[in-house]
Length: 215
Image 1: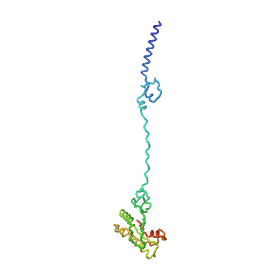
Image 2: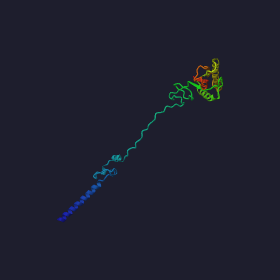
Image 3: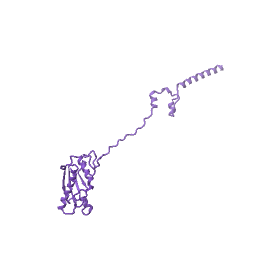
Image 4: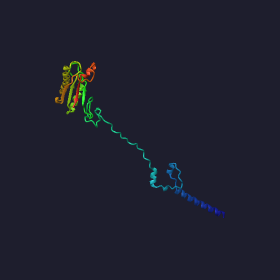
């Protein structure tokens, strides 16, 4: 009787072991849980994961993209006359020319230091004259007025015609460079409009000058 009972218990144990083995084979531990170091219940069936869920687990978060910052366009002033291109109606003003609010030349003072009692253009003025000539060649609609000045030495009866002669000297130089004479007018102011003191040699040299007004 005891032998039969023992055999019966052994049979039941074997059957239970087989059933347990089948249950363990039917339910497997999800390796994804192990990779994430999570505690996964052994009874959680691996086959219960849907395809979409698996893809969600395997999908990596997209790398963050730095925002693109577009800098505002800088104010451009190609001819460096103090007026930006957007407002400049004369985009090729040579350096040294005064301009109005539209960026167009108004006047230019040529610092030509005439010798005392002389109407001859000095060699030091050649660069300014070349700049003026090029501007007139490139801006064919422009006309100029040349105004001559003297220092206060001497009497007005001599200074007035001398200032006019200095303006004429520049006109003749420009015409020789191909500028039409009908685009040039000349006049003289004598010693009436000094820009520096006539008490010093330096000041008088600055006053013996030519001014060019561009129209």
